[in-house]
Image 1 (cartoon, rainbow, N blue to C red):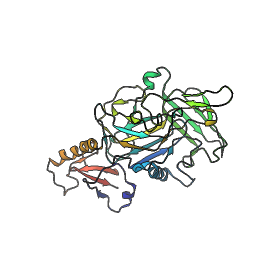
Image 2: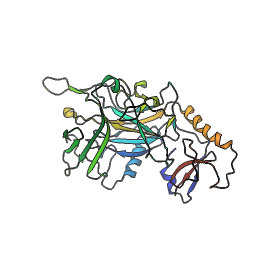
Image 3: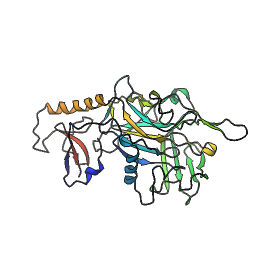
Image 4: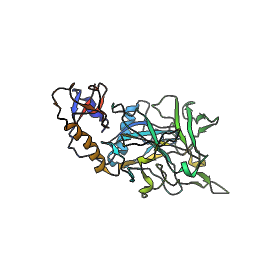
Length: 345
């Protein structure tokens, strides 16, 4: 578990967590929700001008954590959401590690890219290095994927189309339509948004010669909201796919503390509007192995037999097992002599 907002309100700077508490295979909380403009923004979930990044993350948590199964939209290209479980997801060799559900159907794929991060600095927030999980487009669409892509959306007034520019010299807009009347630019995120990542090739085609019948084709594997949810294998992800996002160099990861998903297409498909990835939930596919791996770190520390009475002399570690030189001062969750402790100040 990386962050429990309710616990941060407690008076004491130290809060013990029960190491024997039952772990969950489902998302425990959303850390960040930064969508791009889109026709479902400010409605899934609902938002007002009084909302903040923190309140929107809480609204997303209510919709997709603990197997709630409701939908959160990410908007057009680059919009993202970051979440975590109550434990690190361990990399079990030659097995899929976690599953993410969207709301797609055959012919309606809106693929999003999945990224993972480890809490390297031990502060309990997703501000460390991010790695991309390489999907099938890396081998099926060589020369058609844009790495190091960057796009900026700028609000041009209330209830207006949202223009964008990118680092490829292209311009365009997220168009309004007659179905959704609310503001398309996220109400709590200012007037300009810039996103960076990998851009997948467009997957939409109009199959009608007299009107509009849009088909959004699926990729083979490795993307959220790409295949129907009853395809468990197609919606599962392997930490062994981790690569550095720009160089595409493989990275060996023991586990992931945070997971991020973002819309990976910059596309408007006729009357369907912008292609927008959605998420409805996620789960650890091998909860027992993940918990046992994490517990193993604690057991190693406990075997050292250190006295728990002195906070400064105790052995402090980040949740991924890195030994810290001194008692941490940043807010977050740590291991002190093998026991979880939250530092609130």
